[in-house]
Image (cartoon, rainbow, N blue to C red; front, side, top):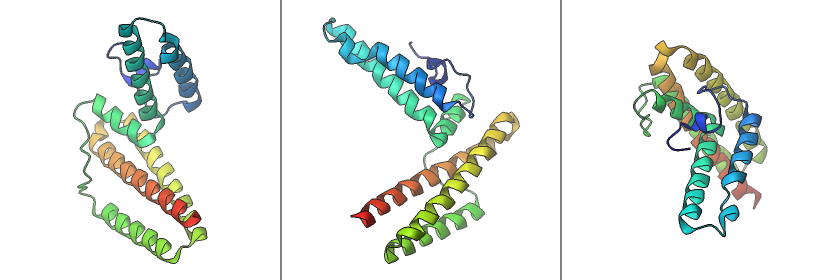
Length: 173
């Protein structure tokens, strides 16, 4: 399988919109072929190659099934890597980030599980809108700057979702 792109590994065209069920089915099929257990009696070199290929498939799958990671990966295929830091020249988004963080802090302080569920739904809607915006933007090659800005916003929402999950776990205990 060599150095094929993540999309090529799964016989997919590089695109933001993916059939996630097809991706998962193809992943399961490929991972069964290279699962290290199938190479238990094989020479050490074959075992190592199977393990490496299994890890590569897993990384590719995890990247493609996550909208924000898929967006960043698509951008990286076109040239430079998207920087990790979110020094966004995007004042409206920076203000929104601060407001969302304040709201999350208030929910944490008040241990408001119902409010947290509403907050999560609000984030899910925002994420869906970003995904749609990125998909439309990705189809238009002239809009790389906008695509990068959207990918950074997606990355921020991913981090916020992780914080919401952690808070939910703490409040459930």
